[in-house]
Length: 59
Image 1 (tube, rainbow, N blue to C red):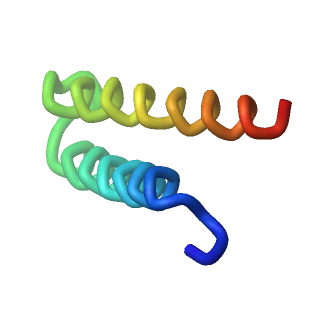
Image 2 (spheres, one colour):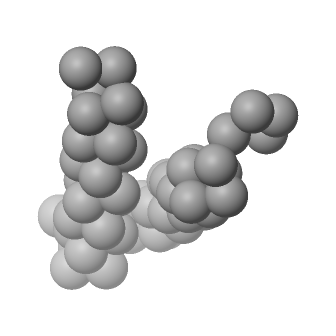
């Protein structure tokens, strides 16, 4: 990820891993399953952090 801080690159990698994990869990369980909900909550948190960092940079 050229021109990107190591912190942002790690965050994007974490988002991708978390999303893939959530999709994997959801393909084997109900969307209301506790493990899927926990993965979704983690992904929301990572996406909120990404949004904060990108809007702060552009503000």
